[in-house]
Image 1 (tube, rainbow, N blue to C red):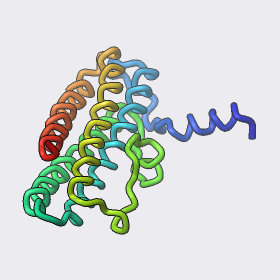
Image 2 (image 1 turned 120 degrees about the vertical axis):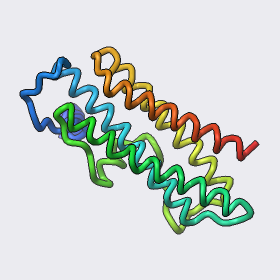
Image 3 (image 1 turned 90 degrees about the vertical axis):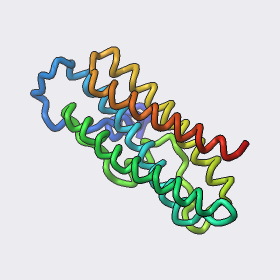
Image 4 (image 1 turned 135 degrees about the vertical axis):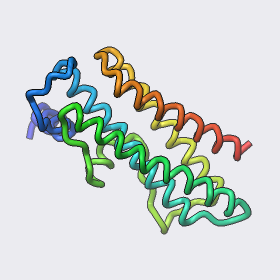
Length: 178
């Protein structure tokens, strides 16, 4: 397969599938597609961070166990609710939301960890979660600009709220390492 065909196939595989082509909500089809693509990457980052946070909640040990176990639970519980809001926004724009591990791995900017066999100590967990929250923020900012330029206020509002949450999580986790 030529490089051009491979790139086209990969781009098509990463683009969300349109489900309702006759949507007229005041945002062009092209803009809705760009926003849905960005929100799909944001959903993948958010899901990967959720999964990592939940994994660390289960597997944290050491002198910070109680504090981190509780903090991680609070964070992953809030993140779980947000995942649904992000996916539903993609659907409201007329596109299918990604929903498989394979899609999330392909779309996410956050490195997947090895799981139970490679769980780091509590400081490593906190460092990874700081990095993951910062990655979610970077992805959100990219999509936010696209949504804002298209006049997609609901997506802008959603992304602004998520930025506030993930910036706060990164700050709180970062403070544990000082």
